Length: 268
Image (cartoon, rainbow, N blue to C red; front, side):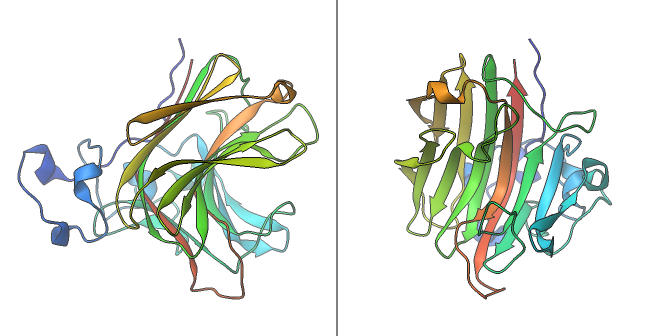
């Protein structure tokens, strides 16, 4: 079995010792919902707290149709890359993604994103088969959103001409968590409401692919299953996570900000 841990959970040290912490002490998180591990440092770049060696970052800046990407080598380490779109929240150590409504987009989307794309250790793009077991797990909270934001994806890789995702997990401004499953590589998405969390509150998800034909989604401990249409069998896949804003305007102050306290990937 091959298991690859991509990002470690963040910590609030007082919680590890059982000391009570008020919400006011960490205003940007509902700390009771955060999965913990030692040694998170809110004073370093995200790469100082997370293993970013197998992720590439896309930001909502660059040339029209060609957003800027930041390689894993630039993301790594305490002095790794960070800016106003991707940074460590100095109050609680969260890896934070900001995507305004006005920003550079890919040719196949009208929406800006600050989002990680799964890579291999070699630096090549991750591109795995549906067979086997694949999991993306996160602890996060949506800080702000105008309409809705995609916080996790399984996206199609090689195998055909489609640029669609297999699935997208959305958080809506009314608190609904919605899974969008693609009907075929040609398009058409079916929404499934899978949970509800108030804005600013911490929650968890695990997006799993098992047996080559099933999506296993767990949100806050509740698991649902969805069949993968056979038309996707020819395609390889990869994970994405961050803030993929789902609304656009001329505003650079409205948008979607998402804070991650844990993110892991495994394949077997």
